[in-house]
Amino acid sequence: MRATRALIHLDNLRENITQIRERVSPQVKMCIAVKADAYGHGAVECARVAEECGADFLAIATVDEGIELRKAGIKTPLLMLSLCAPEEVKSAVENDITPLVFDEEYASYFNDACRSLGRKNYAVHLAVDTGMGRIGCLPEEASSVAKKIADFDFLTLGGMCTHFAVSDSLQKEDIEYTQKQFNLFKSAIESVRNEGINPGLCHCANSAATLNNPDMHLDMVRPGIIVYGYYADEVSKEFLEKNNISINLKPVMTFEADISAVRSFKKGHSIGYGRTWTAPCDTTIAVLSAGYADGLFRRFAASGIKVSVNKKACPIRGRICMDQCMIELPSGEENCRWERAVIFGDEDFGALQTADDVARLTGTISYEITCGISKRVPRIFLTSHTR
Ligand SMILES: *Cc1c(COP(=O)(O)O)cnc(C)c1O
Image (cartoon, rainbow, N blue to C red; front, side):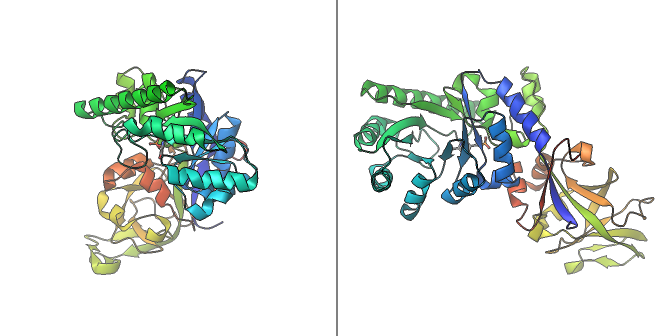
């Protein structure tokens, strides 16, 4: 096994999904986001767990992600949240991928593909842009676009959705903005109904709204980051507890590297490229075979993140290299060659911080931390049986 790896705790994933399910009414469906290789956790394995937990949909971003899941035997309906290229549409239909559409041109590609593949009543979801400024028709255009979709010979309107821009913020103006988006979405749904068209499954709640806005669940919720055990920005554990929403999310990824060498240096020895750190006294440095090409980004070095060796905090020293980095060992830990150094993850596996903590310290969001763990880092899937 490579000295650097991401442990994926599938039990934690299952537990997170179960806890979210319990906070959503039984009649509300769940669409679990497994896009971007399940936020870096491994799409196929995470999709299998989500499927076993009764997910009604799995959300993907690209046709290739859908093909990967279908090849692995995933049968759950797939909702594609981004637009694909016209050349990919046929393959999307062949793999039963439900697209988001919001204009006649894009919808026509799906209609053409369905005609040529002999597919009838192919469900598409109408995306409405209520204030995200990304994909979607404007709310006032929703009924006319819905009508066009309904008029296509081979398509049917399977649902309507919108996406919130600031539902993870607790600023007063942001809360109002989310409410405004929700109201616009509801009026768009009404306008479609008034055309005599069934809007199908209506959905808008991402992770933050799933936990924080139960009134906005509608027919289906679309949680992503919370499934993987991280909080959605300001909708933190502390905030949720204050509002009597008790949920104990567990991180699904532990990123760790074996200590490949232990070095003793005299005072004055410099560490790494650019000589940014010089030992102020005699010291012991551990070398890890993990660097920025693994997702341990250079900006982590100065952030104050703590790498855990036997639950003792070790600072990163000098610059992080492409494939290696150096940490300073506390005294008493000199005999740790080949032991695990845990960068972030589950405290039961020795971590002192989660991807949420790393994100906070490095000025980003947990999404970017786990998605950043690169392809060369093997994902080791653990369940209680392998523990
Ligand atoms: C990624 C995404 C989600 C899930 O977002 P989280 O913040 O991870 O819950 C939901 N809906 C859409 C449209 C998305 O792109």
